[in-house]
Image 1 (cartoon, each protein chain N blue to C red):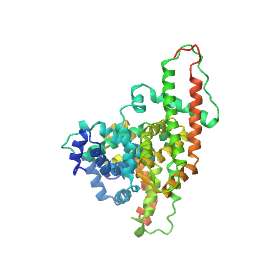
Image 2 (tube, rainbow over the protein chains, first blue to last red):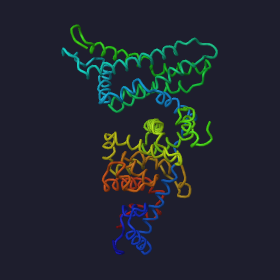
Image 3 (cartoon, chains in turn cyan, orange):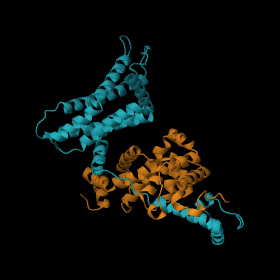
Length: 254
Length: 201
């Protein structure tokens, strides 16, 4: 680059970040000292970068640390169960994705697209599908039971939430993994439902040991507002139907 | 609660979950902010926070007690963010087609009528413009720019981290800067010199 030519923006960006070698950097400095146009361009670039530096940090809600810990703690404690099953079984993430796609089809299209297996011998893959489906079904059943308990809890005075807190904490990790899997699989609506459920579980896990009747009313309103209980119930039913279809018939080995 | 990170790490290594809890309390906000800058999504940032602390917990045995826990955690968070970005190539294509002209038009929708340089430089309008520009970056542009601009990583380091060729990394950074410049043009250019930075060249 000679003094007769102007620098383009990309070159100035490299200079700004100190990415030019010593010789090129010195040449650039010399040119900038003698070229008004390039000096103006560089000054403008510096102002852009300075403005970017003023971008404030994202604002986080009060209690962010408490919620983070509530989500994290079960994962730290858990040495077995759904997550470790995932780790043990190669290819299980892809399998989980396939399962969730099947479940999503059953859930939202109102149909069960899977053709029952006709093979005489149940493969190891089919066994894993069943185990994973059973895990998902159990998770949804437990979530559903907790939502039912919350919606039908007796109103009046202060409510002891310690048991619900523990239940919610236990459910968060598995829910998060299913939600991430749905996300990865592109199952947006299943992911959104699990996300909605997860946020409620996280808030419950991070709630105080007791809730006032007003707080409890808010929890119920949150469950009612989006039909969360209904959606979880429908998804759970879809999973159970799939389980039935995948069950080996008489004469099949398992 | 342990007074220092070093004391908390020592206790957490021995299985004291409350000690690890104190580390989460001290550092989770910083990890979130980094993850949000890197991923541009609150949802992904929350996942990065979870994954970062999980990895840190599992790797506590490898942490050297003389090192700074915050710095170590920061490195893990950057890696988690990169892993997440690399695992989602489909998001890249969604942004790569963004034409710079379309991008400029989109950013222009943020009304800046009547804005004077004096009041704009540190104003919320500037921040809104930058935030809008950030959302117009592809995942790789965003990650490369954040690593270069805020994390001070060299282009070679970024290339290795993101699994890109050096030229591709440079290209991502150049495009990101160009988008920032387009977004901020009204605020940073001299009135007489508005227009393309390199139009005269």
